Length: 154
Image 1 (tube, one colour):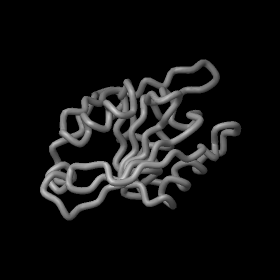
Image 2 (tube, helix red, strand yellow):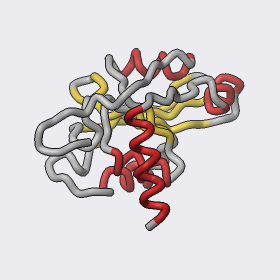
Image 3 (spheres, helix red, strand yellow):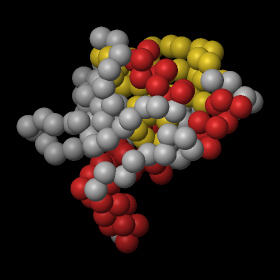
Image 4 (cartoon, one colour):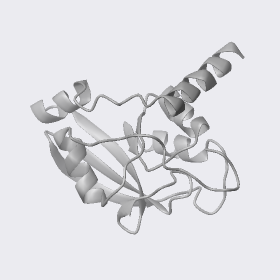
């Protein structure tokens, strides 16, 4: 119970006070120096980063090694047509994803992904190819979740 409250509190802080993700972290260093492979899932809609993680039609899964994209695939989002809490984060964990990039995402999904050790980058817009180039180079700018829809709060 206490851990759940603590996780909710951290999500609240992250939402209220924008904590910038360190894009020049060890991940970026390892990607550029070689020998490190990373799988990145980008919430995708019509070739662009989707605004809402859970409702995006597809995920572009990119495997990056030595600063280069070595494999790319597009997978259907199993939660696209129906909302089932935990389904999409678990699906991405089972795909071996290390990082998720999306325009927006609810706090429960963020907490679940982070509990799996998956980095989450929100507030991203643009074409998937351009976003990936920026991520690999370390210049990707994230921000607050862009998820905004009337039926529930993210």
